[in-house]
Image (tube, rainbow over all chains, first blue to last red; front, side, top):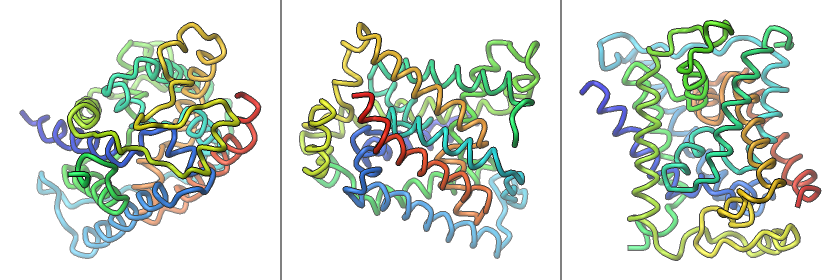
Length: 137
Length: 185
């Protein structure tokens, strides 16, 4: 039962991303062609909502559902990993028009071919795990 | 009913995505979808051989439940909450797509040219889909996060590291959309 809230949040997330068409290859292509404000609007408003929420959490030192003070951990310092890792991710994002969330959501909507994207993503994650110690971060 | 059944406005959608992130933080967790790829790899037991997958993925089961919910949400949204007015992209974009031999959306989320069931018999398309996935999986782990972890959560918390990653996402995306896709199609 303690998992039900996560199932519900996921359910809402899946509906919103599908109805916003953020899972659509077409919308991602259109965004990278600068032909529409739609995706920029979505990401912009999501970040604005997040900024306001995070500021409220920090200033009022709000507690989470378990009563612990909420701490949002800082990202590790790094250079290569963010620039190069980000660039590689971006290439894939624009190629198949999906990021990790939408890969799963599209599978849920019934696109069997997206299973190939998932296989590729698992393979990419696996290879990173194998060679990470040899990569500059 | 188009407000519900058609394309949701970006302002409503963006607000709800922001709330999903804040809700997960309130639950004592965080918003990060690509971590699930690492969990799925670890579930196979490869952690015995590769240290990166030898971690407490069971503590991340909640995130796999989020994914399961998201898949169900996608199913409901596509089958019960959509009409034939969705995915109305810019006509200029449609002209560009014609040159790539990719058909107009016509109320479809994904182009048949890339995601239709015929791709299973087209070696080139199989490769494109698997390679695209590979770049997403490799890149998100290398960068330590994807759109949810860096673009939404990281930028919301003013993380400079995330800003680098997000700039990387866009540079990579622009290179692909403007220079590499035209070579592929």
